[in-house]
Image (cartoon, rainbow, N blue to C red):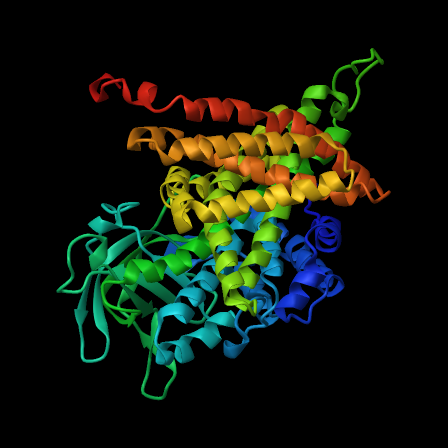
Amino acid sequence: MPSYVPPIEDYRFLLNEVLGFDAQTSELGFEVDADLAASVLEEAGRLCSDRLYPLNREGDEKGSQLVDGVVRTPPGFADAYRDFASAGWASLSADPAYGGQGLPFILQLWLDEMMSAANLSFGLFPGLTRGACEAIAAHADDQLKTAYLPRMISGEWTGVMALTESGAGTDLALLKTRAAPLDDGYAITGTKIFISSGDHDFGGNIVHLVLARLPDAPAGVKGISLFLVPKFLPDESGGFTARNTLSVGALEKKMGIHAQPTCVMNYDGATGWLVGEPHRGLAAMFTMMNTERLMVGIQGLGIAGAAYQQAAAYAKDRLQGRSADGKAGPVAIIDHADVRRMLLGVRAFVEAGRALAGWTALQLDRAQAHPDPSERARADARVALLTPVIKAAFTDLGFEGAVQAQQVFGGHGYIREWGMEQFVRDARIAQIYEGTNGVQAMDLVGRKLGMGGGTVVEEFFALIDADLDSLAEAAVNHSVVAQTRQALALLRTSTVALRGADADATGAAAVDYLRLFALVAMGWMWSRMVGAAIKGNSPLHAAKLTVATFFGQRVLSQVHGLAASIAAGGQSIMALPAEAF
């Protein structure tokens, strides 16, 4: 039967040999070394493989249900969530001032990877809560923080964000939800759609962060405010027992993540409180949204990793055909070159993506905790630069990886028994929510390349250059290092070209540019992994060197076609009249 094996040895390799975890965390004041970090991840992995993965298939088949206005999650979900929270996993990286454990964020991000691999629908509950906590911590007043953060960080309560309306998706300037002043707070009236984790049966409060307009709001996005709207309001004794006037109108019928209750939420004059300044709600919400965008990228990574595991195990057992050297068949399909091509393509992404996610997580901690304000600012800018890349590239490659792993199974991949079709269905949403991947690409080329007058991206490229130089000085003679340097040169050329391009050319090139950027970043990670693996003699080290060669020859080589597409401009895309489509 299919199973999930947490990638603990890979985490150990990255912590100890690639990312310099001990030096980084010591500099930031964490009392956590790589051995302790690996132990935490090992325990988290057991939770994911033993508790969450067994719920995944039944959760998909039964789904969440709306019964008499009440959401019922699939069997086992509520108990698993309560155990998850009581064991402290909800508070892993949260602020100790409100009851969090304050552990390095890399542990949180890799826990997200394992949860996504084991049970994507489940992982959304704590992931959205964490993002809501960050928005409240950054923008709410002290009274709201004190009332809500401790119980959200503990996992007793959960959080969600409510942005989308039927007529206002990506263009939030069109939203119509209203907020009318009350003696204490505001009355929120409107309907939101696509609200993941909008309601459930886990117990405890559910804290909605809702975008709405005040009566005097200017038009457009400059007139949007953010409100905290709980399912249960405080009562006279200080408890939270009074039911607020919000309700679930329907559950969305979706392609995947069936166990996750994606709600249509009705706010019928629901009581809420302003978070941050009036008319500045979008900026406040982006605190949560950027957290979620990283998490969503990790969802793509997790699903691809789990799908690869299943496909590799199947390929070693499934007997079909003859081997290329003419041996009498049937042979295990792992002997066939095309099957290996598919498996290696998924694995090359997963292992580089895991490393890049870890590096980015360490930058997040530097942005929060480094003693030098200028270094905090540099680290924060690096995270901002990489956020759309991780969200879009990891979810695109995660979906592609799930499809390739499904293909390894042939017809068996299309039927439910093996679980591969669920991976494909579940992975698909990650390319869409938290801003579609086209929006992420436009954010990268339209906003992030211009940060600091272009210095942020140039400093990032220089960082890659410096690592490649160090590897060359250390006589690390592996092809992926030279290939990454060549790819970086193409990326630099494309970056310069886009800075002077018109809107059509920029829009036409954005998705290709983001993929090119991601491939270079992953080539950088493979170069770093090669630099570590060449010093070792274990099977893991040998495998890293082999997969790195595949990545350089078969994946990183795609940069030439991407660069050519970017250079072509937007004329052929915009030439066909709209009526001709």
